[in-house]
Length: 252
View 1 (spheres, helix red, strand yellow):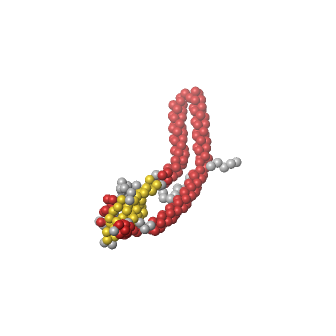
View 2 (spheres, helix red, strand yellow):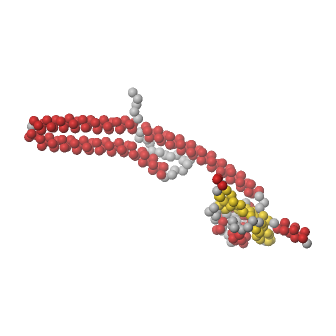
């Protein structure tokens, strides 16, 4: 004979108890009717006994039904509470001990899915970190000063050339609002008002480098993500002082 799952066995056990109680209630009811018919003087006592038995049967069924509902609902409630707390990926779920075979299978499968999802997330995170390092290495090789500002106005990337212009370390620039950097540097104040999407291509701005006035050509480009959606803006500053001086010398 196939072994029934614990939860189903419990339901069948409660159902059998209900059938047995109903059977005896029918038997006692039949006996009560016979007694009332043959011994009318015992009718009141018989009715009281039947009423008491009915109330006891009803109470027993309520208790059995409550126990069945509690055993089914409590594990689901505990599981929902754990998931509602939004546990962090990479950490165990710490699911409550299962009270039945069905919930043991459910808990096992949930743990397996959670572990696979955590592993995938870890791999994706490592790939993103590696990609970020590659991008930063490329940006550092660019001779132009550059800064990348996301849609919320926060700086996501900048190279050393830009940091030298505004005299700030990277820790005080990256992940900070471009319009609210902690400095009153003259170059930064000029760039803050100048760098926006509305300025014309190859616009020029004068900045101080080592106490010397230098002329920069400014450009901007939209960075697009998946589906061509705009995710950030890249601003470039190219020093054209030497080029202008050469043109002036040729003209002279």
